[in-house]
Image (cartoon, rainbow, N blue to C red; front, top):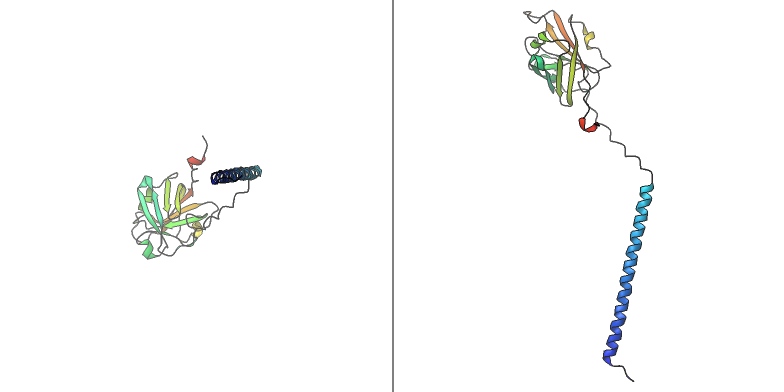
Length: 207
């Protein structure tokens, strides 16, 4: 008894279908197994103690010296209406155009005694009205700082101890004295101010 071509075709189609079903089943089972492996790996990883955070990159070092004549920032005393650009240096070309930061003293963004001088007949004339407790603002190329005046006094020109380093951030202003003197004034007027703490960022505090 011979088998007709139609019967052979039917058997072939059945075989092909069975193979296709087997392959599909294998693919489904394989995918499920892989998912199980991935989930297990994730759970193991999550169960581990948290890794130490990577160390923060070191803060950039701020300069401790500046080129002569380089602008440092703007110094202001709001109550007196005083506002003066401060440049590096205390020689005539600087003091003829700006208040001068004395190069041998700390820069305002570093810790120590930062000294700034200016002519009494020019930028620092308003200092004759300075008071204890007045606020000074120093907006610099490396941050903005506020100071509070803690004392004023008069010294001789050679009393350079007023430039001595300090442990706390300090701003020392220097001008000739008396303010109404005609010619080269015989004394120096000194303002000492302490830097105020930088306020905490409200976004990082609770409440």
